[in-house]
Length: 406
Image (cartoon, rainbow, N blue to C red; front, side, top):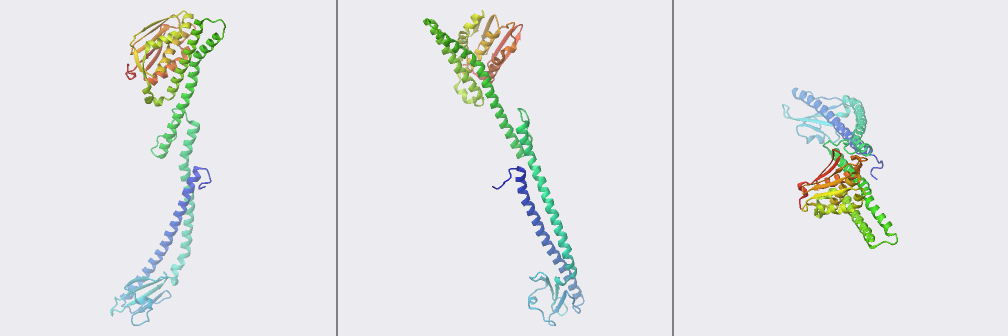
């Protein structure tokens, strides 16, 4: 395993420390090279100085000390390794011996001045303190690199940790994650994570809405099926009662199918363009007549009547299951929470349901029914409005041009 410690900070530090050691090593090599270069420069300066003095004196006096040796062509036995040197300053392979050669004397004979660094006391005295000082500086640089690497690792890890804490603890819909406005890679990561969390929250909300709305919508057809089955279990039923209860069970089954199709489609709202291929031309009056028929028992029980003022040609392009559920909720809200006459009017542009509000009810009693209608309208780009005017409850759906009048 490349990184045994499961920490972003330690992973960054593990990458920075080798780089720090490399920098210190490179620094050491450069300093070592500088030391040799400095020694060579000092040695060459000595040689040039002594050579210039010798040439000014016409080579009458050549330097001869513990660290300088001189040779004149024709007078001294010149070492073989020096004889091939041209005019200038040369360094022997041992790197401690330097030779200055010149033939600019009056008689044209070459002179050789040799400097032995090992015998040059001033340079030897500098070696120890200089190496010690540079070693100390190298140690300081090494420790400074370690602390800088630790600081950089923490600086790089902190935004990631802040983002992780935001995402796991602080995030809620509308919350801006740490670094979301940045233009670098962290900003890209933060925006991608925020988008993912938003999608997850929307999916969870859709699932909660599906459970909440489905349970609300299923109660009525489930109760119809349960009551009809109870009736069918009675003895001595005539054919009319049997047919009527079987028809109610069949209608309730159709309602359940529409409800499931509706909430599954709402749960896949992001796939709306694909689902539009399955939209159909829906006649509003026919759908409402079926809704009224299924609510007829409750309408009669509450001594209500329905005034349906709707054009026969009021056809719109929509998801059939959804428009059925929406219209069922409009009528059910009016019947369950209202009184008196229910007036339904509209055309291809709109549909409006109005009736007096029952004394024991208020607009708050319409609850989930309004929420379901609003979600269906939002899915189709329709506009749903609910209002109270002089004790009349009015629910209205305006169909947009996008709905396409079929």
